[in-house]
Every structure is written in structure tokens, then in C-alpha cells.
Length: 124
Image 1 (spheres, rainbow, N blue to C red):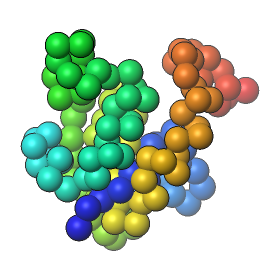
Image 2: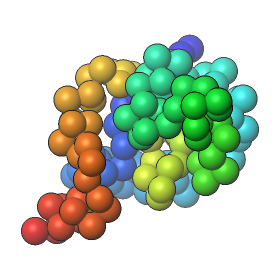
Image 3: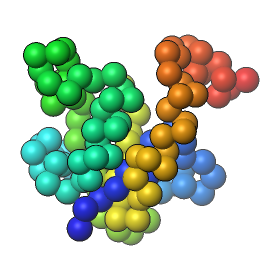
Image 4: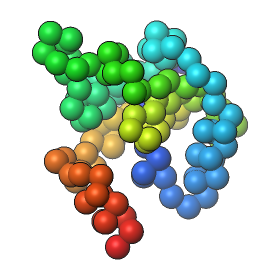
């Protein structure tokens, strides 16, 4: 099974917050290599681009070379899932995720935003 991007923790609301908490609590750390075996590569490439990673190490920082990113296996609503954590935000992939294209319209909203401006928007 190829796991598709569902959403990130910032876009998680309502009853799904309890699922997110359980997912994080039950997580097992895995390697990037293991992560790549299970997730949709197109979704991951879209997310890497949205997070301003370069697609080749000769151009700059790639996600693969960023030691601040961690990879995990866990469960979402009783089903296996995979996620990566970047800057304290979890991006999770599930068996029924809609893919990065479904979430793409939301990326522009935060393009060029700072953590402070996002926090002010969320908490205002």
C-alpha cells in the first residue's frame, strides 16, 4: 500500500486532535529510507517544494540532508500511518489520504509567512 498525504497537525481540528495526540504518543522512529518505501513520492516532492527544500543537494538543502527532520510510523484512527516532523509540525500520510494536490490550495496562504504571523492568525 502507498500512503498518501492527509494533512499536517496545523490543519487538524475537532475530534481529530485526539487521533493526532495518539498518533504522536504511539510513534516509532524510522529511517528516511523506510519512510520512502511507504509514502507517495509525488506527495512528498510537493511537500518538500512547499517547505522550500531543493530537489538536489548541489542546489542547496534537501529534506534528506536536513537532520532536523524526523520520520515515524504510527497509527491514525486504528490504521497504520507514516509521518515526518519538520519544525515541530507533523505531516502525515494515511491509506486514505487525498494526496498533496488536495491540500495544495492551502500552501499559498502561508507562503512567505513567519511563525509569528501564522501564530497571530491562529490565535486571533
